[in-house]
Amino acid sequence: MWWWVLIWTILVVVAGVYLVARLWGLWGQVKELTAETERASRTIAALEAEVDRLGEAPPQAIAVFQDPRDLRRERERTRASLRQERRTRQAARRPVWARNVD
View (cartoon, rainbow, N blue to C red):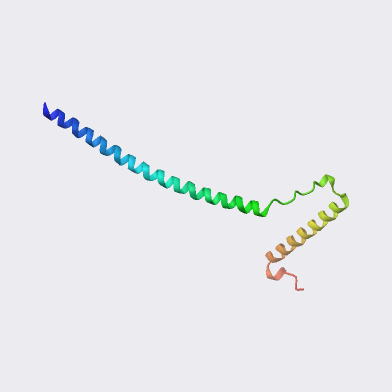
C-alpha cells in the first residue's frame, strides 16, 4: 500500500515541476512582451511629437472653386512635363544607332 502513496507523490511532484517550468517560460514571455510594448509606445510617442512639431499642411483648395484658366494652365504644364519625361525615357531606351545625334 505504501508504494501507491509513493507513485502519487511522484506524480504530484512531476506535475508541479512541469507547471513551474511552464509558468517560468510564460513569465519570460510576458517580460519580453512588456519590454516590446514599452519600446513601441516610446516610438509612437516620438512619432506623435514629430507630427505635432511639423503640424498639418493646409488643405488644398478644391478644384471646383478655383479659376478654370489657372487649372487649364496647370494641366497643360503638367502634361508637357510628363510628355518631356516620356520622350527622355524613350530616347534612353533606343539603340545607339537609332538615337538622335544632336
